[in-house]
Image (cartoon, rainbow, N blue to C red; front, top):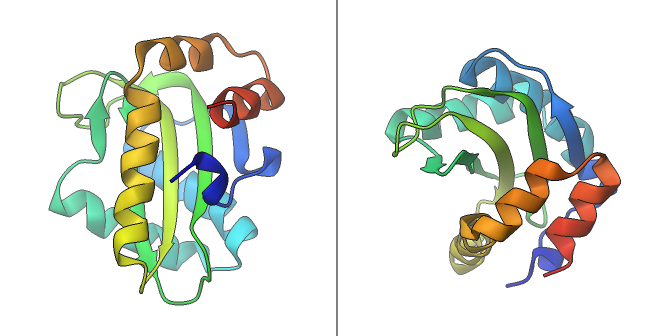
Length: 149
């Protein structure tokens, strides 16, 4: 699965969002995702928070991939942000997080969900890609880096 199979556009990319905690990040990202997906922000937040309670989505190297399943969406919706200041996300490696790729997935998307997670994880696992994303100076630059591979 390519990033292009995930519904992402320049409007789904946010540059240097300012948050002070994981909870605030999830709240703010839920509000942004609500505008892009037409799902209620509270529903998105509750699903994401529930997923975090099962285990952290902070996958290491300053990256988090919060995700959840939703009945009322047709395709996989992605949202990416580079945080203005890294925050504690209870990541598996103990590092703070500054790169967040949010995935909203249809309830019935079994294999597609796993493929999307694997693709995003693979992209953000590459040190060169993480360095490029951290050096990016605009939303447009972030989008180009995410979709160039």
